[in-house]
Image (tube, rainbow, N blue to C red; front, side, top):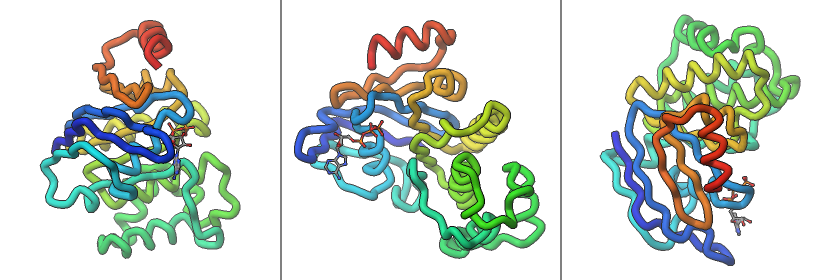
Length: 221
Ligand SMILES: Nc1ncnc2c1ncn2[C@@H]1O[C@H](COP(=O)(O)OP(=O)(O)OP(=O)(O)O)[C@@H](O)[C@H]1O
């Protein structure tokens, strides 16, 4: 699976994306970085087909990009009085995915959700909600997983297991894009970085040390 964006433009009242070009390949995690209002959410919504764009091209090897892409927003919405397990079952039904009890238990175990799976979401912390939102995406096996600031609220232990899971997921021939403001997370998790600045993208392989990474991003953001 590959995806190439060429000369993408998106205008609201002002031109937010002026000339955005980059390439994504299966098997990699990408961090999407940029100042508040740079256009990260706009770009993710365009990639997932939620909103359109004004000019440019999105080239890809998929039959239907919308069907293989899953966007997790920064403020996911839940049914407060359904449990985590019920949300996962619901999303599987919506995507016509068969999942038996044994598989569901394995999935809950793998994503460290067993303890909270039978609680109502109304009782979840912010971090738990983010975990559930990402699990709901992963259980549908999207080839392109777009995560809008999902990691900020996770404690270091949960973050570490989360990081492993996202990297593992990408290595199964999938693309993972994570938007974040936390540079140590971006450095830790990504194979490549996409810096959105002034409506264009700078794409770089992440072979930086953490200090080099921070210096580079801060000078180019
Ligand atoms: N539906 C909309 N109508 C008009 N303007 C919009 C709309 N959505 C976003 N914008 C504007 O587009 C710009 C980019 O917003 P976007 O949410 O994509 O940025 P972002 O990089 O995700 O920001 P943040 O890091 O703060 O989440 C902002 O100036 C925002 O006000």
